[in-house]
Length: 81
Image (cartoon, rainbow, N blue to C red; front, side):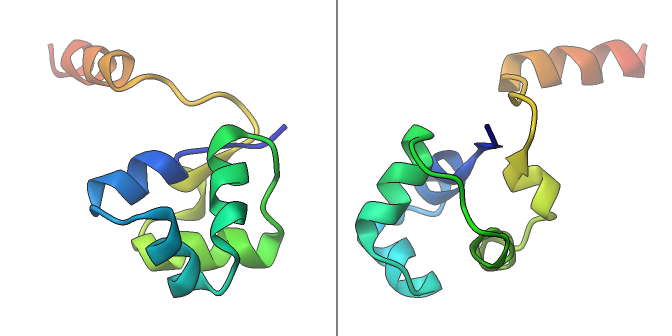
């Protein structure tokens, strides 16, 4: 299983699934499948999505579940002390 943050990245930009699908050249249903974890992006699509959102690929996709934002913030605060 490959985990992703596509839904978070998409909603932060205020995009619909259709808007994102058109931007990267896939069917809008593909975006829904990705967001639900029903489909793993091809390497080509993963790079297109990361490039579209202007993030490193490992910020959008991971072989391990992503930490929640609360967990990441707690780690950052702990590191600052």
